[in-house]
Length: 234
Image 1 (cartoon, rainbow, N blue to C red):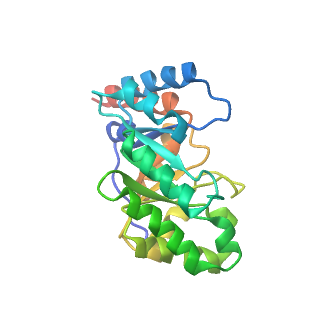
Image 2 (cartoon, rainbow, N blue to C red):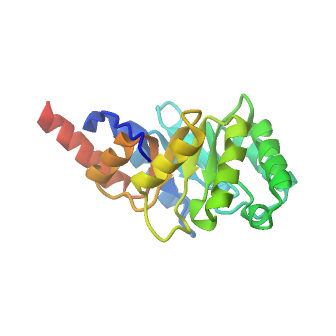
């Protein structure tokens, strides 16, 4: 990882890069709406919700700059291709502007790369022109060879974003994982990363390393710290 390029990031840049994750099991509609109001006030990039809650989130955020991102196949896409396509269609129809789209990990671990790519690209095609796709790279589930094969599938798909997900990695978001992805597939996609991001310092370091978006639950703390820092700096 010798080609480290640091991007200059100011506190003012951070809130607009945050994706407020609302994927907790058992999240109630009342809690969802409260968190959407928070996201609207903080002017973050998106709220990330389950497909079930897309309509509610869209209704709450209409007229604001905050988008709705649906997590399709979260976390490992253990579903049929037909179900994945149907979810993508439904989320886009209901107003999701972005979709975090999981690749079928079971297919990858079974060495069935051809069908894993067909499955993923079929769902990408279903969203074309209606929602921005972020390919989910659950890197903690793969060995090094599998990582490179999955990144190749993502690159060939032509999606504009890749999400480095840390559900199974055993650690949180790391700069080295951003650099690995960038060195492997170049600058063809923008990067989102999640996993234990709780401070403005963490957020700034990750964005400086090349992350365009950050997925987190501590959105309020990070955004308010950024706003306070920016005002003090000004």
